[in-house]
Amino acid sequence: MVHFTAEEKAAITSLWGKVNVEEAGGEALGRLLVVYPWTQRFFDNFGNLSSTSAIMGNPKVKAHGKKVLTSFGDAIKNMDNLKGAFAKLSELHCDKLHVDPENFRLLGNVLVCVLAHHFGHEFNPQVQAAFQKVVAGVANALAHKYH
Amino acid sequence: MSLTKAEKAIILSMWGKISTQADAIGTQALERLFASYPQTKTYFPHFDLRPGSAHLRTHGAKVAAALGDAVRSIDNIAGALSKLSEMHAYVLRVDPVNFKLLSHCLLVTVASHFPADFTADAHTAWDKFLSIVSCVLTEKYR
Image 1 (cartoon, each protein chain N blue to C red):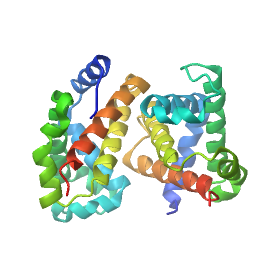
Image 2 (image 1 turned 180 degrees about the vertical axis):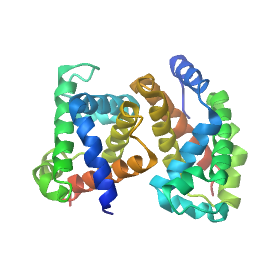
Image 3 (image 1 turned 60 degrees about the horizontal axis):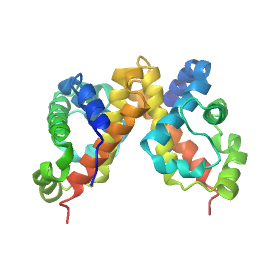
Image 4 (image 1 turned 120 degrees about the vertical axis):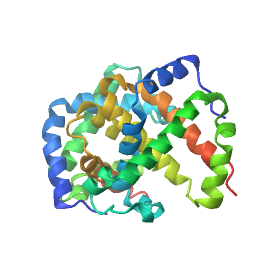
């Protein structure tokens, strides 16, 4: 189980408070689909994903990105019990969505890149390290109920 | 996997800016690597890895210089990094999983330093470029 120090929790909560979840969500999901095009396999019904600008401007991508990142925000409120917090979502991703958990790791790292891009030097090595723990914890929690 | 013409152009153009701070970028990428993935420190028991250390700065500069070599020979990265590839295979023997970790930290460092340039297309180009470099460095492992 992931354990967060008080400093890590403070760094994470403080930065997250400044994140525009709608914008960052769209950016993160969009970049996932651009940088790792095979991830588009889960989004056949999203319409036009034929170019970078189509993907980044796609309203379904933005809406879904917002949904995903809002859920991620819930993780930040439950850092001490990520497995519990994501149990239902884990079952959903396995049984209904059939998503390979590797995709959670990819999205987590894309999110880290988006945060670095947005926050620049404020996203220093220590803040990054804390966020890497969160994204790894979320990825593991989402994979936990797979069978 | 190979770079498109457009991706090569992005890398070359961004390298022009990156090269003016190449040492700092290389050093910060290593700092991020050791902070986020402490197990990578096991390859450097002989180094002082505290942020700002001379060891870190020297090694960061070496990493950046190698990337510069790869950029300048972007059509023949395997040729440019051949000696380095042998060194990693026979001497250093860094487990291949770690190249992904350092690549990610290089990406994060570039993203945080060059916000205007780190578009989704640039993100793709750099991710691919670093993947190719990683492949070259591990291709002689066995």
